[in-house]
Image 1 (tube, rainbow, N blue to C red):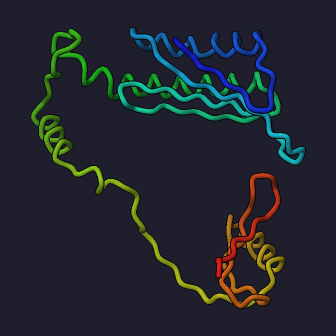
Image 2 (image 1 turned 30 degrees about the vertical axis):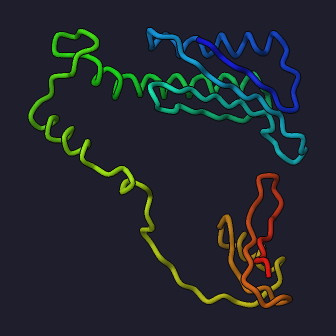
Length: 194
């Protein structure tokens, strides 16, 4: 496995790199050809973030992107968790997609798989689907009255509702604004440009 490791706000020691490579090698056992991976190890400098050490790993397997991200208080623990996640995703990918597409009825690699009539019909339908139609769509619409209030009051309403964001009319500017939770534990305010 070829791994490109980069660090953000962290010294990439040889011990840390070796640990990451050793953990990711377990995922390689599921494939015969060597895999290329990109890893980003980062530390958030904000002291209010409890799980500030993040490990992200991205692999491309036959055009499919396999990605995992985990954050803990310890970089080695983050690496353990993300390596386990990547291994599970690769195992799932190989058992569901890779083997079915590359084995024929004798188990030999390279030939087109032999499918039952039902599987063949589904495969034909899958080739005909326009993948633009598979995108997420709006499945629910909601209307509610926007009340004039100050941003601090809107943040309180958002917390009471348990939502990640809250739209309101800013009583100071008379414009529609949105408050939202930031990852650092604070609030953000989105205001339209005039």
